[in-house]
Image 1 (cartoon, rainbow, N blue to C red):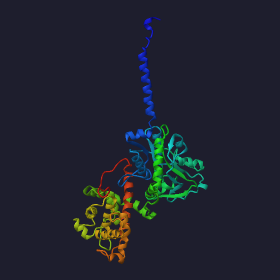
Image 2 (tube, one colour):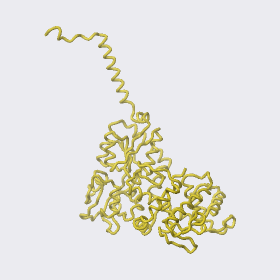
Image 3 (cartoon, rainbow, N blue to C red):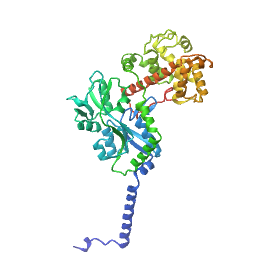
Image 4 (cartoon, rainbow, N blue to C red):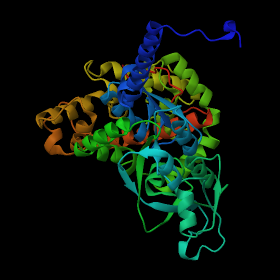
Length: 473
């Protein structure tokens, strides 16, 4: 071999420099790997969260994004100095896969981890307990799990519930690509006769799905967890556990459970059935009028429709012995004030009701904001501003907050007792009626929002535009 083909020796100083650079690179990359995941995410300021669409995970409500998990995970992100960024996936398996592959930082979608999920992810400590429970379509016989025969029980594939069916040796059909929420909706519609869900989910869906009937609870309990990528360190999971423990100690977890599961407004089957029938049969004739009223006044059309349903069940020729008439049940005085010459004309009635609502809102003290402003306005629409002020005076006498609807609604019924009304400017009134009135409208408004968003394929990441008397300043 010629000298010209031999490798030239590397000078000593060059070898030394190369070694220094190699060690520097090694320490640099080790430093990056040793920085805990939590700190790296905090430096970016974002926490990417995989979820699914549903009342216990993430949905689009009257005031924008809502849901038990949405609220809780948002609090966690803020507690760590980050902003939560939610992505809605079609199924829980898809959400968990996004975490496993590093596309998302955590999964928070009311997840009951299966054996497979536990093997590929870190999981947080349990933060809510519930029970597996069968459900069926109205009109079908409840399923006895000890004598199920060959009855087909529909569940989402590759999850805790499908594993439970197999473990209990129950006849099941796990369906890939469908979330538990879609299966519950399908059972309500009669597409599936029986399904296996949880007590928490069934309670959360009762009002939305009137033909979904809870059945037998299985004799075991299960728990809800957050899931994290096992490829990284467990600093994010540990922070989540500390946060969840603090939330439990402060009673915040119980408050969320009550708001989204245990203390939801309840109505009997006939009320729910009639409402959904009227949504299908009556609302289409007036929905464009409600939407036009929103354009004219800025009030959410679904709120106006909820008021209309409470007033007349969307009957444009409704009348009462007290003289109120029409779809929005306007008095003669209100119609005159709002320049309405025909109370039986649905267009005029809806627009008149919307204008009157804005007029009532202006009378509420400026300092009252948020939902309290909306509920006070609705109560005034029903009973009159003077009687509402009397109830606020009673509230103040009890050293309670006269600007809080929750406090004032406890005193409104006292207006019907001479002991109290004799001491007030506007005298006696049927104070229980505005309380029921407001609570009913809140109920119908929530259902109409659910129906409208489901119909238009909106989820909690879709966002909503600001509306008067819905989101409040």
